[in-house]
Every structure is written in C-alpha cells, then in structure tokens.
Amino acid sequence: MKYYTYFPGCSSSEGGSKAYGLSAQAVSRVLDMKLIELDDWNCCGSTPYSSVDELSSFCLSARNLSLAEKHGLDLVTPCSSCYVMLNRTNSILKDYPRVKANVDEALAAGGLEYHRTVKTRHLLDVIVNDIGYDAIRAKVKRNLEGLKVACYYGCQIVRPRLGFDHPEYPESLDRLVASLGAEPVPFPLKSRCCGGSIIISEEAVALDLIRMLLNSALSNGAECLVTVCPLCQTNLDAYQSRVNRKFKTSFNLPVLFFTQLMGIAFGLDDKHLGLEMSIVPVKGVLAKSP
Amino acid sequence: MGNRRRASSFIDEISAIPGGEGIRLCIQCGTCTASCPNAERMEHTPSELIAMARAEMREEVLSSNAMWYCLSCYLCTVRCPRGIKQTDLMHALESLAVREGLSHSRSRTPVMYQCFNDFVYGLGSLAEVGFMSWFYLLTNPLRALRMLPVALNLLRHGRLSVRARRLTPEGTSQLRAILDKAESLGGAL
Image (cartoon, each protein chain N blue to C red):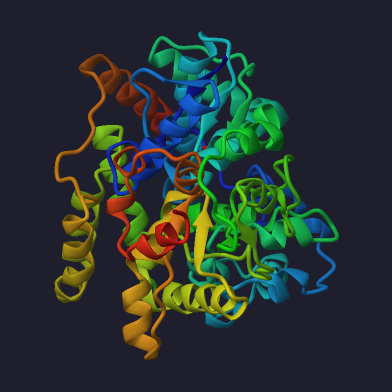
C-alpha cells in the first residue's frame, strides 16, 4: 500500500467536478494507493489570486503546505491549477528569501510554520510513475480495444516546466490510455489551452479555443477525450453545446476524467465513477467495452 | 500600500517583482507573441508590452487590456530563449494595474478575479454558484440569463451544489488571520 496526503481542490471535492474526486478515490483503491484527504484545507486561490494578489496567493498555498508537512507524505492533487499553485509557492519560497520572510510572517499570524519539505505532485504523475503502466495493465478487466481516445493534457499539468513530462509534447497520459487497452489518437493540440477561467468573463475567447480542441480531436478520429483537470473537463463538456450553437457545429464528444476511463477499464461500478455527471453522455464509450 | 515604496523607474518596479526581473533580458524575438493563444485579442502583444515597459510607458502598459487576456498557459514561459517568465510578468502587471485602479475598462476579467478572490477570502473555499452569480450580477445580469441553459444542465447532472464547502471555524479564522497579515505586509511586490 502506498500512502499520500490528498488535496482534492474545490472543484473535485464538492464542486462541479465531484466525479473526478470520486473516480480518483475508486481507482486508487484498486491500485493499492491510499489518498488521505488533508484536514481543513483551503482553496489554492488559482489563477485569480495569483494574477492580482501574489503574496496572498503564496499564503493560501503555504497554509495547505504547512498542514501537509505534519504528515510527511507527498501531497497529491488531481487538479492542474492546484498543482501549479502549490508548486509555484514551493519554488518561490526557495528562490526569493524576501517573499519567504513575508509568507513566514503571515503564517505565524495563524500559528503555522512551513519548512519547504513537502513534495507536491499531480495524481497522473503518481499513478504512472509510482504505480506504473504494468501494474495498471494487470488490473484491466474490461476490453477497451478499438476505443479511440484523444488524450488532453491542457497547460498547467506540464507547464511551466514541472518535471514529470514534456512541457509541449507530453506522453504519459497516452501511454496510460494504451495500457488500459484503448487507442490514443494523434492529437496535436493536446497541451494547448482550453481558455481556463476566462470562459466566465470572456466566453467568446474560450469558445474559440474549445472549438479548435474539439475539432482537432474529432478530425483525428477520437471518439472521446480524457482530461486531467477539472476546468478543462468543464470547458470541453459543459460548454460543448455552446460551441455547437455558436459555430453551427455538431460535436458530441464525451469528455472523461482519466480516472473515469481507468475505472471503466477496471470494471468498476458506474456509480463509483460519477459517469452520470457528464453533460455529453458517455454511453457511447461504455457500449464499446462490454 | 503597506511598506512598499515606488521604485525609481518602471523597469525597476517590475524587476523587483518575483518573476519580473527577466524583463531586462528580452531580445524582442517575438517567440512569446507567436506562442500566445490570445495575442490577436490583446491591444498590445506580449513582446510589445515588454518593449513599452522598457520605454517607461508605465500608464500605457498598465491600462492595456493585454495582460487580462493572458490565460496563464505558460507556453511563452517554456519557449522564451532568454528564460523570461513571461506569464509571471503578466501577473505582475495585473497586480500593479489593480493597485493603481487602471484595469477596469475593457475587460471583465479583473472583476471576475476580484469576485473569485472575495469568495475565497470569505469562505476559504470556492463556492462556484455564489461566485458566478455575483460576477454576472456585477457585470451584466442579462448574461446570467443567457448562461441559464448551461447552469440548468450542470444542475441536472448533479454538478451545481448551492451549499459551499466550509472550513472548520478554527480553520476559517486561522486563514483569515494569515490573509489579513499578508494584506498588511503590502503584497509580494
């Protein structure tokens, strides 16, 4: 059994991407991983905080890191934005003593200290590198052969250079999907941006980007996409009908969290994977895997 | 703002921000602009913005809409041949613009960020429904109506919970004390 401190982030805990958190836990049980949720964690602040109030953004992450430090385990998150924020805070505290002094002073106001010993990791990194493709393959119960999958990484799981995969041409998710028996299709836009939170403030900008991604996936023969980020999933899934309306297209591409596809391959019950929470129905994907 | 002093020049001011120091290294090759998914929507491209900053065009830079169209995708950052952290630089300019009140004209993004941050500050956790409703109310309530189909779809699939996750009372006051202290220290700038 491998143990980790788990940081779900707002979306994957009780927010719009509950299905990600559910399926992450379900798949971890199969893989003999224990994701122990960090007690009383707070929001990472994401892009909005880091864009306009950097010190507070570092402090939001530093509180989580400080709480995690007491457990002495790697801190794992399924969310790409939380991943960037936690990592960025660690590296800023290392490189900028001036910032660290301020963060230390702020933490002290809450009775906390942080000594920079927590390693922060994305769930995909942990699954492919600590568990490994062979162990994953060994758990597959359902045949996904012939299912064509576009593996979508988005930005913040690989950029800025975070170390576990290539910043522009990542492959770990493709290899994972292949080890499940499905077929990753070429997907040139796999690490391009979905628009992120700008979908809320400047919808037209994000819809353009989402359309390009869906188009690239479809034209490469994909029958579904898999994602590693709550916001990417929401943009591609919940806004797919908006794209269709705006551009007179007829995309009908299911968008799964990678943990959901793993759960399907492992033969887990749908209700443990939150499949019913997908807006574009995933039935077509399931029909291919008797 | 706290104990922060205005640096002698705009370039010094930017260089003093974590990630901003690389601005002196720019060779104007345009790689950042060519990599940016949103450059065409910006009043000034990322490389132009750097050139303007180095020409001390402080007000023009800080009132540009450019940084508000940055998606934080970090493609420019990993491609820059001079190792400039362009995304961090954009964030630095956003922070400065907010502090100077120069940012609220041609993009709804600053208001969106502020709504998000207010909710996180208040609850310690992001309440998606509350945050989005508040944002639409502040900017354009009619857009909220247009977004209703998306919201109803999410609701139908169990993805909109009105009740937000809360920290423990101790956690809430601890976080509040930390953030208030950070605010009194005048930011990371």
